[in-house]
Image 1 (tube, rainbow over the protein chains, first blue to last red):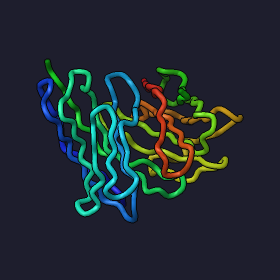
Image 2: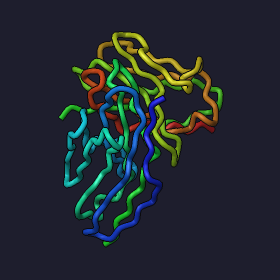
Image 3: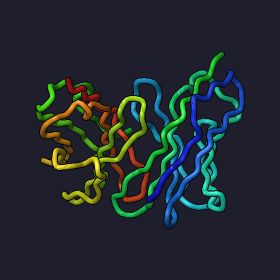
Image 4: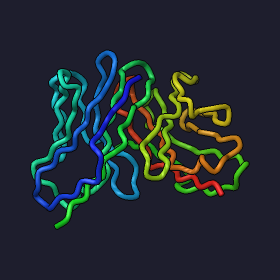
Length: 113
Length: 113
């Protein structure tokens, strides 16, 4: 079945460091890909998405490019802030009617000043 | 900005009791979902609902679980006889179309004693 694999955390960075969180997927067909963020004590918020190959999703300085050839959707940010500390989830949706989001295990990011 | 709301934010119950978790999806959305997140683990899909019927469910969603849209605005998850292992954060989500981004509520933390 479809699945998402994320790099294991936690990831600990200093403010202004470069961030990469790796995400690869296995899916039949052409899924949509998402990054969700969960700040401490809160629910899930959509960070960015891409719906087809070579699309780049971006938001709040974060970017991710849908790479079909490597089945990847790595999350990057050029300069992280303390406020970016959260758990980041990569997810996919098969685009069939009413189907589930399939999440990776999540990567905890901790940014210190 | 429209948002998904959930009540209560925290529910404590005794093992074997029935609980009903409530959600109000975004008003023009047609697809509704329940997910759960056991503490420290990944977000897991439970069920999706469209046109007043279940469109997909996971193996977690056994006979103890049921969903209902009792009126034009609420979407509920019932657990008939709670078990200790049902303790988790339960997230409701909705989407306008299939395959579109899903908007999550803030979650209900269920604690089964």
